Amino acid sequence: MTEKTLGFDTLQVHAGTEPDPATGARQVPIYQTTAYVFRDADHAAKLFNLEEVGYIYSRLTNPTVAALQNRIAALEGGAGAICCSSGHAAQIMALFPLMAPGRNIVASTRLYGGTLTQFTQTFKRFGWTAKLVDFDDFDAVRAAIDEDTRAIFCESLANPTGAIMDLDALGEIAGNHGVPLVVDNTSATPYLCNPIRHGATLVVHSTTKYLTGNGTVMGGAIVDSGTFDWSASDKFPSLSEPEPAYHGLDFHETFGSLAFTFHGIAVGLRDLGMTMNPQAAHYTLLGIETLSLRMARHVQNAREIASWLDGDDRIESVTYSGLPASPYHDRMTRICPRGAGGLFTVALKDGYDACVEAVSKLKLFSHVANLGDTRSLVIHPASTTHRQLEEAEQIKAGAAPNVLRLSIGIEDANDLIADLDQALG
Ligand SMILES: *Cc1c(COP(=O)(O)O)cnc(C)c1O
Image 1 (cartoon, rainbow, N blue to C red):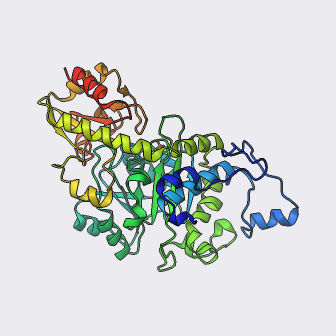
Image 2: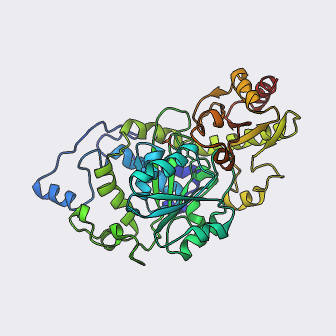
């Protein structure tokens, strides 16, 4: 019985964990410790040289966090994973080994609002640029790639509209240009979509959302497919050449398919310090145990509610890719065969003011800047998450002023429909 042959429902409960070797504790203990005693000076030296894998200091590695890393890697079909303090930290950590001043990424216009801000504003301070293009226009994606491009970045199921990206086509474009495809799989989760099977090199997550599932802790993860040849060109010297930040170690030569994972821990976490704490890892491990059950219910409820909204005359449009009339419906059956998730937007005929009013009248839906909770959530992106963007950029990101984003929870769908009905006035 190897992990490769086990089903998703089994892996989400068992992968990466076993009874605690010291105590037999069945649940993964919260290893609330900063440091670990070295057996002797030789052991310490081997650990620091990465000749032996073990625990040194919890900024780098911690057994509770390691269990979560292994579980997420197993669910995504990756070679390894690195957990960190938030989804935004995961994005920086994913790009850090690939980038340098003057380099760029080509990224989708359909991204989480906070990601757009991180990419277009904060990246500049590192000397990085993000070229934003419509990822349904493959010629535009190809045209944007240049000598300095080091990654292609998109969301599998885009926040906030639930648009689905053609990962197979994007993976092929990335491959033809010798750069990795990095996919944010937060809204889909590995239950609905496995980006690595569709050509992704790296998968990033905000574990804050569906993986934890109940709005308790912040976290992020980067999954390394282990399939990219970092030495095929001279584009990725941190991985394929002696790394000055780690006494000249050549990560690709030394660790092969785990080069990115080891670099992420030994250099990324060590120097950027965006570490996940063991308490957060514990909550996320608990959440993941029921991921498939929750996602199936999120999808079922979202489908029902999106269909109801679609037929209501107060509504201008609904973006849910799970609706048969959606332009993304065919792509869904290939990329997200188990359903289009629990997140979509709805445009109200009565515009910005009607959105603000609906948000204030909803009772079961909580007005929060979060998604992927067991509770249903609502937000008006134009006045919150996408507020910093110009109106044209808001529209491009699917967050026009008359649009509400719904994150459908696992409650009774009839109750959620009744709540929306009264709030739409
Ligand atoms: C929330 C979110 C992020 C950022 O994650 P944090 O954990 O809030 O830092 C990134 N991408 C997507 C798609 C998200 O929904």
